[in-house]
Amino acid sequence: MENNRQNMKQSKSYEQKGFGSGQTGGGDPEYREAMANLDVPAAGKNRNRNKHRFWIGIAALVTFGTAMYFNSSTSGLDGVRSNGIGKGMEAGKLLVAADDSAGLEARDFEIQMKKNMASSRMLIWDFAAEDGDFVTVKVNGEVLATNIGILHMPVSYDIPIPSVVEIIGVKDGGGGITYGVKFPGAVQNNAYFNAAPVDSANVYTITGQ
Image (cartoon, rainbow, N blue to C red; front, top):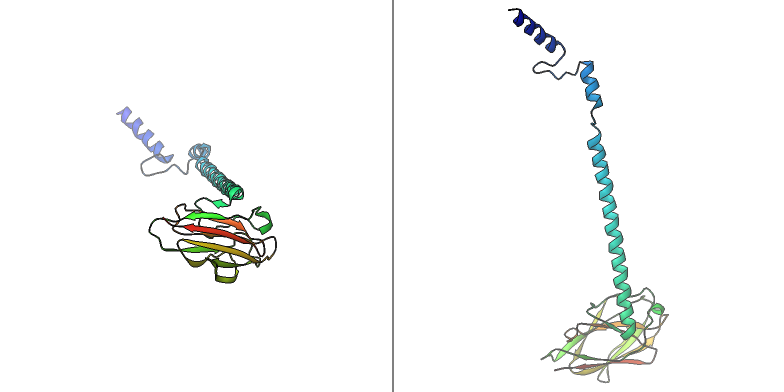
């Protein structure tokens, strides 16, 4: 009996301290001190650390992408400067901001088209600054279009196959007349970048199969 009375006293003592069933112990000073010593802010610190790492990763990706873009643009321009050919480049490709930084020589090209093609198109555009360059286009000695103001947006002209296309420099808006051309349906899916001195022609010999 004495043991039972002692157990009941201990149970009441626990309940008074707030450790009984259904209680949190929030009123007990010892409980509050124990809770205060817990490392509760650790989760917040981890979240802040993870956010910091996330933004560092984003910045690294942006830096890497920018470096790759400028590296590919530079290597593409170097190739074009060497032979005037932009391998696999699309019509409307912009290479430089100003004509005088293009560093191109006037060239003539022979372009082979795919089999069973009786006609194609010539796309022409300004790959540098839209500074008021004008050209005239002849096909097989006949004027197809005269005094064309070349812009960044490609302009399309129908041409027969085979044919000889001449692009003649008419007006230099500043820094030289520079332009790009592409012939859809060519065996080599290339763009061609050129410089046309005033009153001089670049010749494109278009051949079939």
